Length: 196
Figure 1 (cartoon, rainbow, N blue to C red):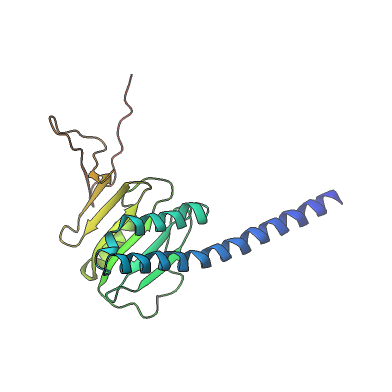
Figure 2: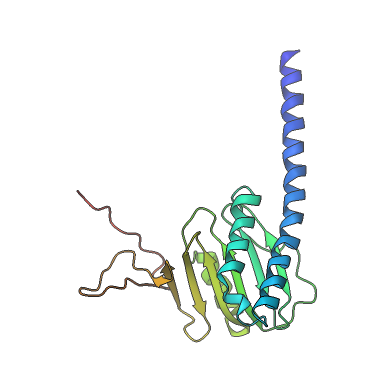
């Protein structure tokens, strides 16, 4: 008897969590769109809005505060229309082909809600497939940590920390700036632990 009650309650909880998640996924779309519209109006145009920290923060907030750490992607098409979807903690795609998307893609922005801005193998595959029809891409790792890719350097992702290019495992002696370029062929090299 207790086992049946426990199973029923667990099922009710899971059903409620799923229903809430569907509701939350639906709410992030108008949230991101409203921030976008506000930035476009304030900045007098959509071209700069793509690169706006406020826009990126809204996408990050949707991914990590509104949703429970799920990847979110925003595709900005040639007409500056937004196509938004959410996925799992480690993957995001569109459940079906976006209707009305006009090429080229001005920008593809997606989150890594676990806090690391780099291109995974799937991300490299995405820019390889869409690269001729995509101007730029961002991967957001939270705060001021992000990676930026652009068509003119299709095999490189520049990773930034606090709006400076960020270096994970190298330091240029005498330089005040650290930087990191992840190349398609190398994947991500993480820093060696430092001994104290």
